[in-house]
Length: 383
Length: 242
Ligand SMILES: Cc1ncc(COP(=O)(O)O)c(C=O)c1O
Image 1: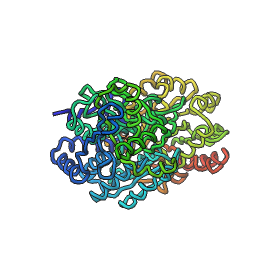
Image 2: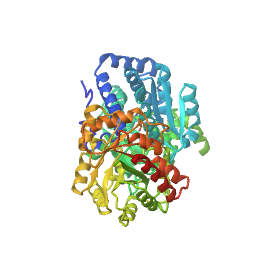
Image 3: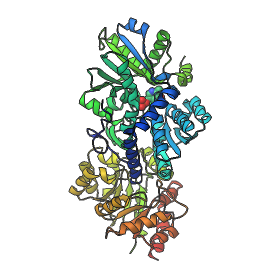
Image 4: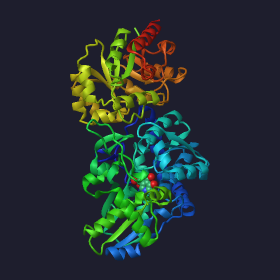
C-alpha cells in the first residue's frame, strides 16, 4: 500500500517548514481537527463514504485527456488531468467534501471558509448544501468585485458571503478574517481551509484529500517524464505530486509571476505555518498580483517550500500575458477553456517545450485544476 | 497592588510616544508596545486599523525600537509582536534589538508554547522575558505548563475572540484566571475585551491586573490627544486600586 499518510513529523513539519503558529485560543481546535482526521483517514467506513461521493457526486475518476493537436504541435505527449470536469468545476471539491464529511463526523453544524477566486467558496457552499451544514464564506471585497458570478453561485447554494474590507481586501485578508471568526465559534463550527496551507494538520490533510488527483493520474498513464501543476496555496499541485513523488518524473510547480512565494519569497510565518512568503525587508507581508484571483496569495503551502529545498520539485513562474495567451491556445487547439490558474501550467509547458527544457517526445502530465467559466468576464475585458 | 498594563500600537500617530508618557503618568505598571504587522490575525477591527494606519505612515520595527530607546519612561516595556516579525531576521537578532532598546519583555500572540522553544531560548540569552497567553479553551494540563513557563506575568485571554472591547466581562475569564493562579505565583493579568474602569475593577476582584488595548486605540483612532488617554487610564487606575 502506498504512503497512506506519509505523515509529516511532529507538529506538521516538512523539513523546517510547516508547524502550527496560531493563537493559543485555536490550539485545541487544531488538535481536535488533527485527532479527528487521523482517525477518520484510518477508518474504512469514512474512506468508503468519501470515495462513494467522489464517484457519484463529483464524477471521479476524472479522465486523463490526451491533448492531441497541441501534442503534435509541440512534439510531446501532453496528457491533461481533467479536474475542470468535476462537479463545481475545480479540484477544490475533492478537499472540501473530505473536510465537510469530517466536520459532520465531529458533530459540527457549520463550515467556515475563505475564498479568493470563489472556487473554494463555491465548493464549500456545495458540500454544505449536500450535507446539511451551514456555510459562512469570507471573501475580500476586491475579489467580490472580480468574481461576481461565483459570489452569486455561493448565495444560490445557501451560503452566507461576508465581504472583508481590511488590508488588501483579497485572499490573504479573507483568510485572516476566517481565523478570527473561527476563534469565536469553535465549538460548533469547522474551518474548512481551501489549500494545502495553514496550521497543522491542514497542509497534510488537504494534500491527502487531493492526492486522488495524482493517484488516479498515475494509474491512467505509463510513467510520465514531467508532471506539471499550477501553484497558488499549492493544493492541486500537492495532490498531483503526491501520486508521483516516488517515480522518476520531474515535478514542476508553476506560480504566478506576481505571486511567486517560492521563486521570489523568503522564509516567514503567515496564517499559522512557516513557509516561503512574499514580504518586504521589515517582515511585512506584501500583496500578490495576478490576473487569476486563485493564485493571488503571498504564501505557499509548506510542503512545496520543502520540495523546492530538497530539489524534488522545481518551481517556475508564468506572467499574466503568457497565461492569457495559453488560455486561448488550449481553447483553440483542444476545445478546453481552462481556468486562468490552470493556464499557468499550460503556459510553462508551451514555453518549456519550445525552448527544449521539455525534450521532444516527452510525456507530460498537466493538471487542469479548473474550468474557465468564472474568468470569462476578465477575458472579455481584455479582448 | 493591582497591575495596569496599557497597550499602544507603535507608530499609530506622529506623537505616539506621548501616549506612552501619558500612560506612565496615569500610573501604568508596564506598557505593551504593539509592533504593527500587516496580517494581525489575533486582532479585532480597532487594532487592525491602528496597525494599518501605522504601516501606512511607513513605520517599521527598527525605527520604532530606535524611538523607544531614546525614551526614559521608568516602567518596563513589553513588545507585542507577531511571530513573523520576531523570526524575520532571526529570533536572536530580534531579541538583542529589543534589549538594546530597553524593551525587556515579549508577547508573540501567534506563538503557542509548542512552537516557542527557539524564541524562548533566544529571549533568555538576551535577557528578554517571554509572557505567555492562556485562553478559555486551553485544557487544564496546558494551562499548568503555560503558567509555569510564562515570565513576568501570565496573560489570561478573557474571551474566545480577537482583541476588541466587549460589552461585558465573561465568566470564562474568571474561571481561567482562577485556574492559572493555582499553578504560579506570578501575577495573572486579564486582557482582551476590557473596555473601561468598571470592567477593570470587576476583573481585579480575581485577577492581579488588567491589560487595556482596544479601549485606548479606539480613542486614539478617533483623534484623542495623549492627555485624554491619560485621563482614561487614570480613571482605570483609580478603579482597580479601589
Ligand atoms: C481552478 C483553480 N486552480 C488553482 C487554484 C490555486 O489553488 P491551489 O494552489 O491550492 O491548487 C485555485 C484557487 O482558487 C483555483 O480556483
